[in-house]
Length: 72
Image 1 (cartoon, rainbow, N blue to C red):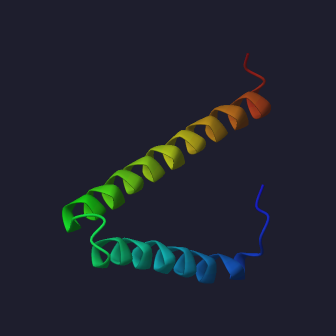
Image 2 (cartoon, helix red, strand yellow; image 1 turned 90 degrees about the horizontal axis):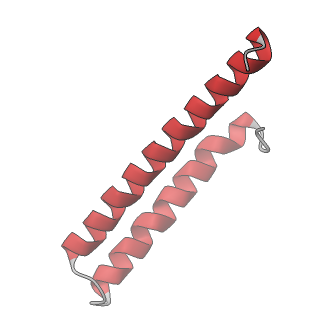
């Protein structure tokens, strides 16, 4: 179920990506992490996001098939 209107999705995505990148840059600037650590964290996060999206799509497809075709 989508909770926000469609025209709010793009600005929200841009804001969240901007905040994430700025936090990564600040971690490098403050010397808390190496650049490679931050890039690796971004890559792992993107991998987890992709895996989560694929899982949700597969579960949704399975649920729709059960509802439409009545499979058990």
